[in-house]
Image (cartoon, rainbow, N blue to C red; front, side, top):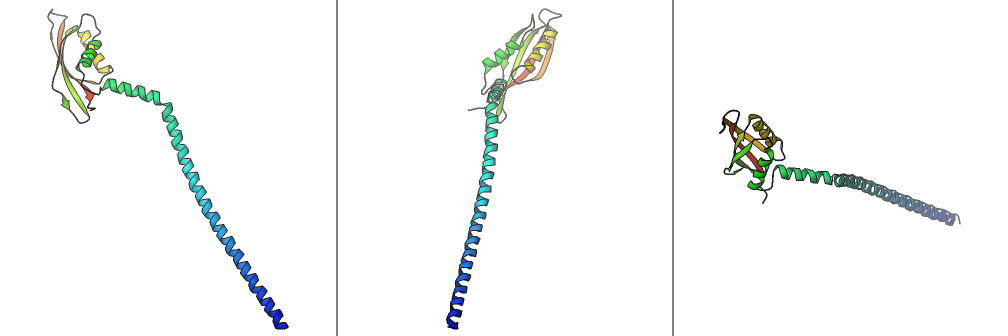
Length: 178
């Protein structure tokens, strides 16, 4: 009878150890699953943070859209998308704002390509007063278009002093959009 009790105790002990082992294994797998879930959550939180930063940047860009469009318009005026001789002539005429001053000649030379943009050389004949020439050159360079003054040759005007004649070598630029 003692062997039966011992066998019973051993069976119960083995069963208890097996149950305890199963419980420990079950707890270990649950703990590992919990760790994996926590890692997944932290990865997702990181992705959410990045997405929120991107959204904030996009909202900021959206708020600045009008300003950017205004800048693009200014840049298009400063450097038109194609060679526009008529537009260049109008720009030169608008820069002439001094009384008794006139542009007597405008001649365009061959274009010079510089990669993403091109240069349109222009020779302008001016007649008027010296102060008018200074104002004209200032208006050309500080206007809405990009202009480079390459040289100015001054001579006596057709009506004599204080009239002068000036030959202005300049270049205006445009982008090579196709």
